[in-house]
Image (tube, rainbow, N blue to C red; front, side, top):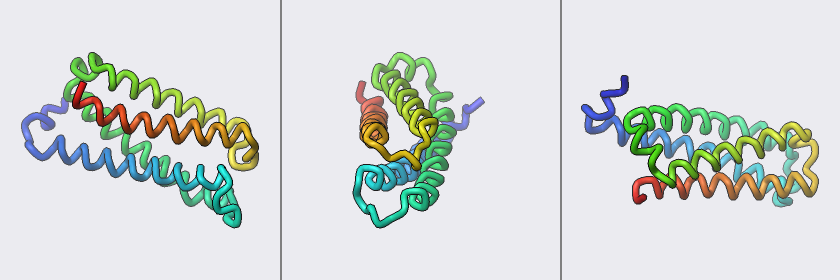
Length: 139
């Protein structure tokens, strides 16, 4: 289905570039919002900042999902055998569950101590996802 990934020398690198742009949008948006949730920039209204940062973060996640699945389709057996890849998938699931719980608990409206812990967890999960993504090539 995705034989073009192998036959065109620029296809896979182009996917990787798009994946990195997605990571920048995802992590950048989350990072700015979560800094606000952790107490920085209190003069900025959290709901307004959430609208400005979380939409690009979601777009980045979508871009990462599409490009990641496309890259995965080119070498599924090799990636599934890779420990860093499997850990990356687990961390993405944990980050998603954490985000779902954050929004279930009223999200931006309830920036309490538990929400701040969730923001720290989110940053940690996504940093670990990025690290595992880089380690895939070396394990």
